[in-house]
Length: 136
Image (cartoon, rainbow, N blue to C red; front, side, top):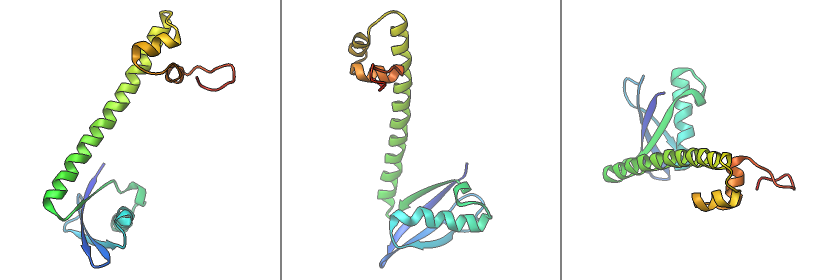
């Protein structure tokens, strides 16, 4: 999937957006009133340029024009992506371990104690329901 880099700089009451990325021979320009609307504006611009649906444009990475702050932001995004990946892996491993413990006869509370989670969380991990039909 393509990634487009967008540099955002305040220009009066607007944000000036400079778009660079694959398929663009030179930077493209657009603007947004608010920074939280910048991605949608860039998607619309690129969708028109490439004649595709805005959802099919690719990834949009917006950074401020302030170079040191832009580097800090990129680094922060990388750490957050890694943290998300680790959270997903931890959940997958916890679920697998809880299932193996259950198969070996451990009670839900025992599994919770071993994994360091509540017995209710173990019930959700195992997909079990209580007497009331709600995940434990």
